[in-house]
Image (cartoon, rainbow, N blue to C red; front, top):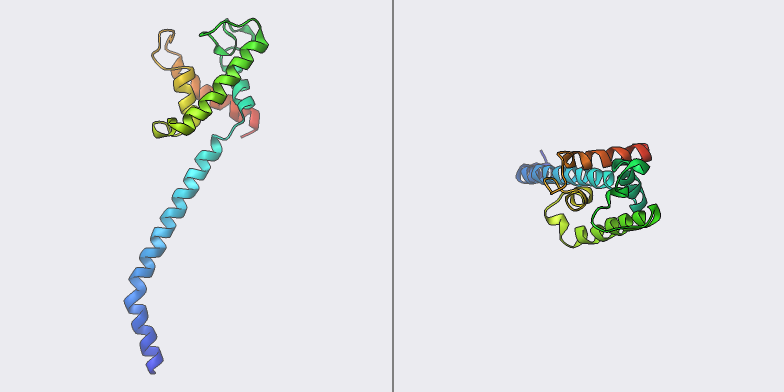
Length: 143
């Protein structure tokens, strides 16, 4: 064994544990980043897609309250749609400001504001709202 072989073997013996630990930490970080990216991607929908899904979930043209708008009065479908758009848009800002601290996704935050479970007008169906919105979003985007 030459002095170079001896030095290389000694270096490997001393640093192999550190290299394995670094590789393991990097693998965990990459896994976490990929998991977050997949979840974030699943929630990337335009305001229009979300509004269209809300329209369907709330009963479409047969609904008593178009787009589920009950808190303010509106004259027609176009105005109800505009109100829904404003709600979706404003809640995106709120989620970015503080909602992300309590909710994992924007849609979960939106559901807590748009259709809260246990509110005065909840007949036990609000718990299905988020699942149904996601179903219509997935259906419309082909996912």
